[in-house]
Image (tube, rainbow, N blue to C red; front, side, top):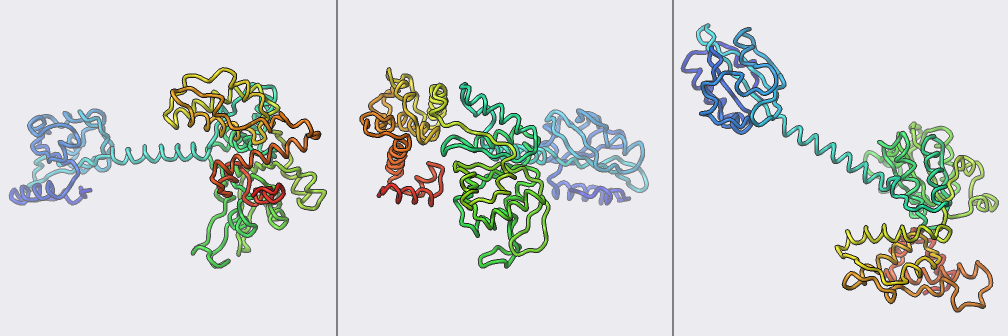
Length: 456
């Protein structure tokens, strides 16, 4: 931007003409010059671009002609004989907001007019708007799920919604318990979104997906040189990233005893210690933990600290499996169909008679995630907008049909789990990592199940 202080000086007529031409060529800002009467006598091309006024339209017009809102700097300069700096104006007809500066033009001791430079702020405003939109989008991505994404009208899900609302109103630690695939992350996100921390980060950590040493450095951060491969300057941990917000520790039962002790310190002292550092860092983080394991059993077996269990078990939310809220299945089917039609661009106009009944009868060992996978399969295989029963995967074994010799619920669940694992592995082409991701369990957990069930 042109420094207007340098214009407030005496110059002769020849210098005046040459200086104005040079300034016009040197700046991308709008420049307007008025005479001692306050009439426009010169404007540069940038002036036309910013104001929307052509040269012939403004020349000879009063200094107020191009102002929509604000005081004329030219008139103020002419009346005070002093420069005016950094004044915000709205100009016409473009309606743009500019920051303007003006200074007197003095020739041989006589006031000959005023020159003003107008700096277009609309670019900065556009950048600010984009930044605000980006921050909003980031919050939307951070809050992956919203309270209204909890789909269902069953008594079981209504009870969970009530617990979520109550948990959101207090800062206490929350433990979400439920089978794999029931949507525990959705409920954690919903608690965060309804809490006073909703404008801050929601950080998700899959504790089972990381080794013990890696999990520790990810959670608490590390100092430069603390281990081989440590980044120069160190790295903030996820607890620091979640400061003033919420951290969601999924599959918390998979954390080692060593990391459990450090997590307990965070909950008790509200501070973390980076790997390789002796300096504590204060954090203000709300912790939501989730597990599909029996933590009480883990405590009895010495695999989970009792003091940590009581710390995270302040508020417990039991997330019901889909088989206990079957009246929600048709609602969920409609929801997934709407989502998948948008994603696949396939329009579904009809579901074959009896299809919904078959889907409601099924017990879904993989819960909501499995239901969504089945609906996705049906949409992809559909022809002419019609979803047919013949495109359903083989669900009979899950529903105990033709297996009268099976006596215990444990046997039924084992058979269902084996069938489901084989189905997902087939869907993933045998890729164990991808299958574990689809089932929302760790790769290690899936390998253990493959060994236990003899699945190859």
